[in-house]
Length: 288
Image 1 (cartoon, rainbow, N blue to C red):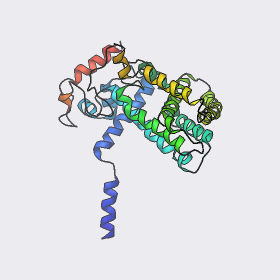
Image 2 (cartoon, helix red, strand yellow):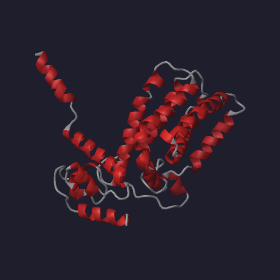
Image 3 (cartoon, rainbow, N blue to C red):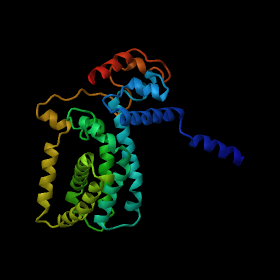
Image 4 (cartoon, rainbow, N blue to C red):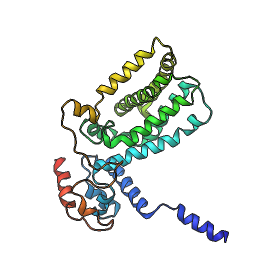
């Protein structure tokens, strides 16, 4: 009886075929982005390399942007796992916790450094779904903010309740600054990025420690309000009168294909499906 139960549990523990296919497509896309460049890689090429139909590729990822969102999700999950030791292992020193989280991110992202600049060209566009401030990036963005919330909650430094929401988001913005520096870092092994973390962590920890003093608390709050009001979020773009993106675009949070992809969603193993060839031609045309 135990053998039967163990066998069933083993089968249940195996990833579902759909998840295996999704992972295969994502892994193939990341490899092709590295080999050919993001702009030169089409969904059709990804499908061919992964040995799946074009319709199947679009079934799991409605666009190349959706693939990159899958990459963002993966990085966020791996980062959360990688920093569990420093955050849950009893370390109370705030500077060491900040240092561990930032170095942990550099470790996770290291294999993707060669083509990170290609992503950044698209992510720097405030209207791109690849922007870290976009609605489509909300999942990995909030996961990263939560990591910084854990950094603070487990440290010996007490944070004033009035700043409990502001500080994790300010720490995430600091991480975004590190990411930008890392993208342009051409030192061997991104050593300059690591040196930046070593210098930055104690300074940040000291600033947070000082923020508990009432005389400095308004400065932190005003900084947070300034960033909140002027960060290039979708809400900020709408308030400024700039045209926003239409709701319902494919995203890692919402899942599924966007408008015009219905022909590919009827079944995972069908062929290119209506519209798939047109999408692929548009992708190739956009890179010309």
